[in-house]
Length: 268
Image (cartoon, rainbow, N blue to C red; front, side, top):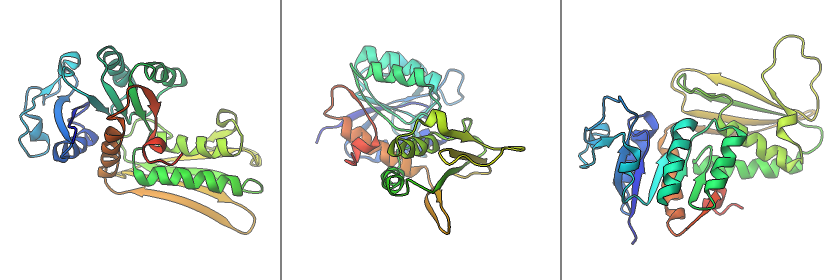
């Protein structure tokens, strides 16, 4: 069994701590670095304190130094941080599992360019269930391709800073691709005032931010006399972390290339 040496970015955050749990418990992974921003109160403390164990790895902010000896990094932070990490990983040949959301089209192109030199799994949601949902949406859209209005509703905790969620946008992309539509041209982000009648080819997005909701997504296909709803609800961040672990294993023998969870799960 090959042991993958893993760095976790944003290790003191809600998702970072869950990733630490999974990495430290996996028999085929070894925590090699736990990273946090400069000024974090957790710097130089044993990363195990974040998950009530001792692991012998101190939380660090010097990203370049911490990557020495790492095979892969799991990064669920923010676009500006992930892109800074990307530059160093590209230079050092460190593979990346990226769950960060909120990238612009130009920033996604930067990930694609880097993937010519390093292997990257980039997915807005690494939950196995969500990625099965994407496949179901593709099938549904191809069948319900006429006479059905499409709406996507997503809900997350009050701390989430981007909207719609990356998962909701990916749902829209999957549906739009199946219908041969350009999401940028047909997406409607919220409605207010006198909007006029709904255009049949549009895909609507509605966002909820409240409490401690981990993540809920529904795609609605509403026709005349019936409505089909495909919903995924996450009750724990562990589902995302377990998906990230599967992505790490998938990348173990990859040298370069840009992949997503559909590749990891064999759903293509």
